[in-house]
Image (cartoon, rainbow, N blue to C red):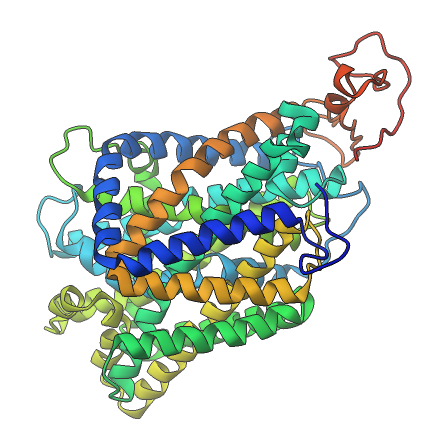
Length: 548
């Protein structure tokens, strides 16, 4: 990948940067100039794709979950993301804080109350709606959409990028995972296309989440301060968030991003402790445990549910949207997690990225969603109508219904701050990832381009909000995810091919020997292969080839 040494695009790939900026600004222009037409087109495209995506996304995500479990527990669990003796860059607490904040912090804040209440009213797995049994099902379905399956997508992208970058010294970009399949061809247009596609999906995934977060912040301001929600206010909040995010990302991962993420984590713990102290404690603990058991018992059934009878739109509204959202966000979150995971083994990585965020999510949704369900079932609070009227206000209505006076107002205000900081960490991690891709995997991309992409993200998010709100955002992210899902399947093949060359003891010891890059030493570059492996059984000498 050629990097410009002078000019506006110094430190970046000029061709990819121009193409990415052009495509995103074109999308902004078309959507902004034809908002109603764009919203209708995206909605129609989503409805057209739904029958296909209802089984396609199901199979892809099911395979990724099984594949990640195998990587974490199988013969390659001791392979390290880096040198054999390399140690992790960040402590476990800082690592988990950052990956959770950049991964799903904004999303679960938005849906932790609303989704269990909506599923409580209607889902294809409960006979009688709005009963205590339906509450358990609604909670377990929320765990399903925010649990192991989704994190399998993030963790696969992350472990693949970290493996090729830190163990094989390739750039921290999506194209690096395709070297085992396409060889040097990924240095040409093919690689540029893959990375631009990753940028495109990342931008729309971030824009969707930022849009949801801004809507929720506005609802919170209305509930706490009395400021009426308006489009102008949403755009102002969006601009302020992105300014702060851009400033923090310029300071780097180890400073601004890390400090914000750790702060988010501690504030989240305060919120959970508040609900345990002032909420229906016994019910929250019991419903979380029971819903978790229901989730574990039914995970295979839910994973392979495809709505084959087409008697409801639940699958397309929920599972297709969420799997599309996870896939669209996966280049962004995957690269960010890869960036902070150097030095960890496959086993450590899978345990940390697949299990830890899932457990945190279960506790969060269990306490927040459980509080809302308790208010509806046992206190006579009509939170169902409130959620149906305004999904983004659900969190603040639930807190107000606790009736703890001034403490409730303080907690609602803290939740607004938490939403803002999660938005900031998501946005700054997103701009860092986009510029990393466009700078050939540099861990310190030019600050000027981080600022440029912060502005572009702000414009796109604002335009999508103007174009039609939540439904348009959902349609956009599902559409953007589809082409990248094809890249994921090629990445799977590339990782499997490369791991087959790892001389790793099966299920014992920590010793590993990486046999590197035989796929690029072939006739197309005019070199004699020098690596002994299964593809070249007659070779006896082991050397370290150049990859560039």
